[in-house]
Amino acid sequence: MGWPLAVSAGLMERSPRALFAALGALATGHLLASLLVFLPFALLVALAEWQHPIQIAAGLLVIGFGIFLLFNRRHPKRLARIPPTQLGLWSFAVAIAHGAGLMLVPIYLGLCQLPASDHDATSTLVEANLAMAVLVAIVHVAAMVTAGGCLAWLTYRYLGLKFVSRSWFNLDTIWALSLVLVGVIALAFTFMEW
Image (cartoon, rainbow, N blue to C red; front, side):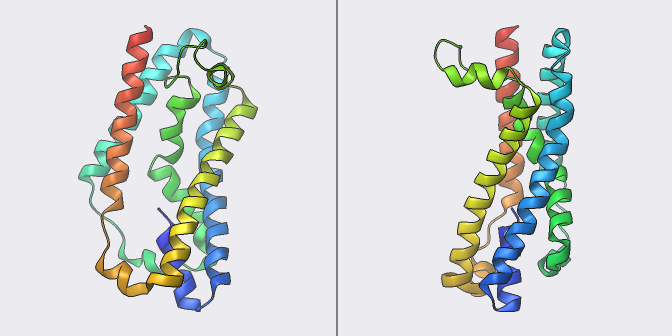
């Protein structure tokens, strides 16, 4: 969700270097936020007898946060002019507030799994250790920066500010709905296993 800020940085400085510097700051903040959410859950997995209650709480938390975002429509207008030095902090705060790490917790806790005989990677993911939490966070951030970076570069290089101001759609609603959907799916898998 930060790629428009990277476009803004590039357009304000009239430099692709500013765009890529902004993407780097966004990636750093997003990775730190994902790790902050993952690491406590990596430690909690050791408490196997609490697996189902933790899974239910994580699913409900993701659903609740998605519903909160659907009804909380306030969005600060000053976000278009965040200095590049503060983008990492902004990325960290927004990733925590939008539940980026929380959306991945059901995957990490094994809520979104296939039977082990169907897919060998599932058993590796479900074993849930600290290294796996870090790996999942890094893969998530790499995918986010790649997708957002492509959108930012295409918008900066070819479409420009007029396209952004005329064809904008509400990413907050899409994000909130995706949180609710993932939470519902996670709860469904939990109750099917129980």
